[in-house]
Length: 141
Image (cartoon, rainbow, N blue to C red; front, side):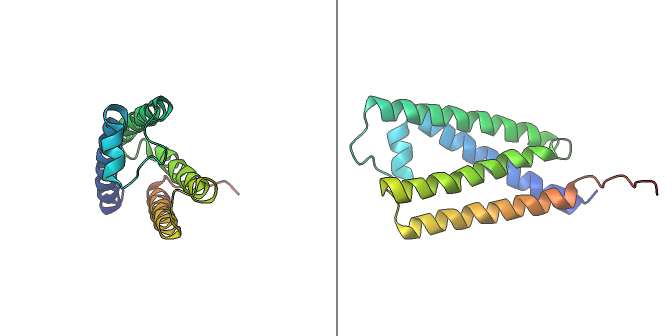
């Protein structure tokens, strides 16, 4: 077992849990404040639909925090859960592109920054998964 890679994975997971927990709580219980923290404002103001959507998003973030917390306790056993995080990043890229192209609520610079962060996270997760996954058993000739 590569203990340095496991330590890196655990540190990343701890940050990932905290990130999802913080934004899950903010989105669920104080969506306007959470949005202001990341510099987003509702173009047409905060209506009932936007509050409901934000609360649903927050609950998903809280569930993901739980998944990553489970993984943190035994990262090698739950290593395949990294693909959930990869999927989350891919969806983030797609949704960011939609917000940019269709809604016009992101600048090109904001989109590029988001995509850059998403791609870096995907690459890091893939490299950790590749370095920690169990080797395939040798096949008889």
